[in-house]
Amino acid sequence: MEPIRISITDVLDLHTFHPRDIPNLIEDYIEECLRLGFFSVRIIHGKGTGTQKMRIQGLLRRNPKVRSFKDAPADAGGWGATLVELKKG
Image (tube, rainbow, N blue to C red; front, side, top):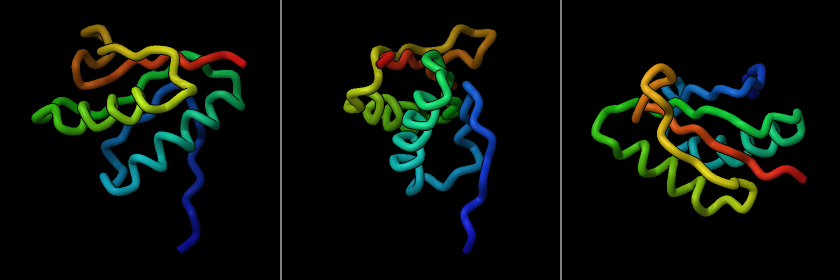
């Protein structure tokens, strides 16, 4: 299968991706955001049981290019999304 090309913005909604693809997707997304000059991004993982959120935040915690992350404010997804600050340079 051919890879599907998507436009990179400062928001990544994970609802359409298979869970097994998420670790590589997050890593590639961060790399591309840095290349494009996005240093503040929002990752939408959904609310559910919180399992996906913990998984995403674990990946972010281990990524050396992530400066910090926190739950999004209520008007940006609340605990169903994570705001991420990336390291410049």
